[in-house]
Length: 249
Image 1 (cartoon, rainbow, N blue to C red):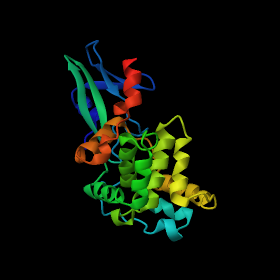
Image 2: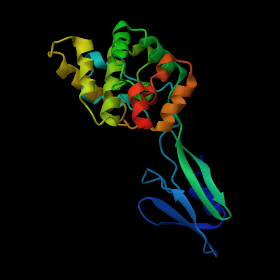
Image 3: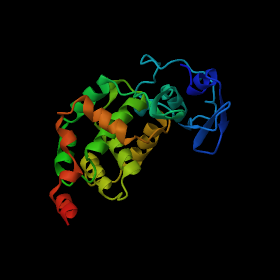
Image 4: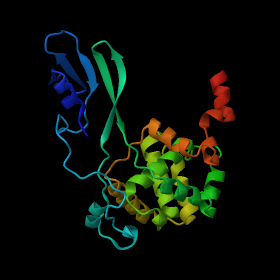
């Protein structure tokens, strides 16, 4: 894939670094400039990545939650997809490019997520969370995103993975961290003995994703658009009665 910098260089444009957030591209003889979103990677300036293209047939460690050591989790890391650049703004010689990531979510990840929604414990948990404090539609979309990044085969995902991903989504997005603690009650009852193991598995789960825990709103909406009629996508906090009264006030 040809980087936007190489393409601009072919048009006789010179690239120089302006600050930590933008690139300024000066035409050889014109005072106008084009603003580009900066690459995330430090070696992205005209340098093609060295890893091979992403393949769903990458070798992946199986049953890592059962008998693997932490060092073995490196085998689960999947390289980031190649960035895609689209023109967000174009006016004369001013141009702004927006970086878009190719989603790693496959139909099989949607299928296993939908299957886990039928799990008895998951169903009871979602029915309990009527105020959507732990499991609104965006947090649930993040579960699918995490499934796609963890590197397991779809048939390997179980109930525990659903709650690991949901707990992590709450870590990332929610200011109030208390409600997510109720996940333990549905998994283990009143026993505290299994909680340390849950946190160990959570750490392994994050490592298996290569620490890529941030999910954009756009990716969540793209995930929901795959099957917009799925009932969990109606779990919108904005539609709750108490939120409606707050907005009206």
